Length: 246
Image (cartoon, rainbow, N blue to C red; front, side):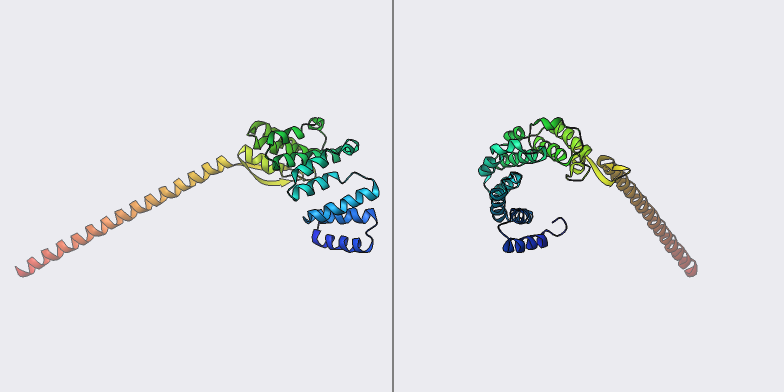
């Protein structure tokens, strides 16, 4: 699924044709279809898997499929399903992230922020769902123009994102006005100041221009010297001609 989602989808579709009454097969098929953007097919399979297994762990993916189909209102209905209260923390957070996305689809960014204001915003442990929550919250804050708050939550997302599930480092760099040069597991993130780079580039350009001006001035001097030499030669020639006539 991670390395070749299209091939994974083909395998899952084959399994579905052979054993469509197994909830595990319908779940795998639904998730594979979701991964390649086949929203309606994924939704159908995950609904079937939910009926067969009685499990509610697919709610976030089902809601996101509704978003993919351009139906944010239906996505919100799924995210507010009463069964959501019994989900694990990571699954509940994913539901809230999808709900926020649906609110944004509907043009209500403030409501999207409210969807994400959950107790887990105070979480400090490095878990993928916490990183995704911080990142989603920062993203909405930035859209609302709250740059300082967005900076804080992108920084929090970066600090707990041990598995690289977000691009929080790059987003934080953009807000700070710096460029992310490299990232190393041992040495951490390496940054460079964009303004400093611009200053260095400007200084180099000025130095180049100064050298060119000096070169131009040198060429002018050489041209003047050559003109003076030619005038002296012509004067000598005229003097020599008068002496010959005399």
